[in-house]
Length: 234
View 1: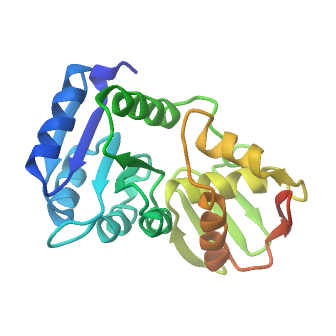
View 2: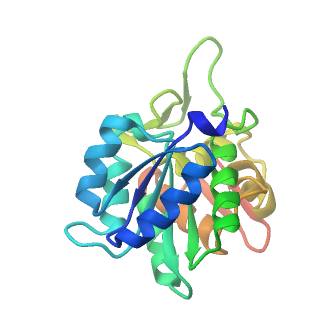
View 3: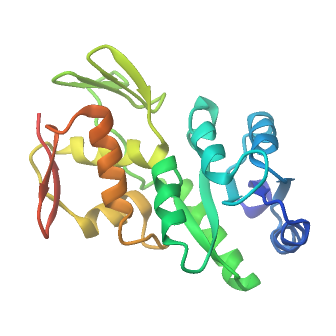
């Protein structure tokens, strides 16, 4: 997919930031939409289905964290990459963002060339044919493991007949782990397989996503090997 076919939704309550980012991305051939609060962003995202959403954290009406949580509930946006704009040193915002379902964060202020490079890396990762996919039973789109049923087409899991739609990165992480039950995946393997080597993520990213998965599928399925990584057990 060429840059000109990608669509990006920028969300920030500061008009000058929207104009600055829009200008630099449109120069690269991207189609750019803008919104000034989370509620407006949700309406636009549902209509336009952007490939990437860049969200500011602090906004009126609905902040970025709340907006991200709502966006991740929309099935048609499960393949959309969401990145937060955060000021330097806002570690709490980054952690909250990952918990809400964000894929990455971009620290501001940021130089135009660096911004474009980060956007290209995020979009490249989103369309990578080498991205991990869930293991499925032959000729089906689902995998059943114990009390879990994993549906790869809808980014959905069932636990004891209770359906849950997972944010994209949580789903990809779970899919990686269940691809080889019992195998220990190192943190480096997980970073590369789920986020890619072109995307910069925080040190606690995996920990946050593992904790969210455990909350949804139970603590018994994902085991931690301290200092090494994680494995899935049936």
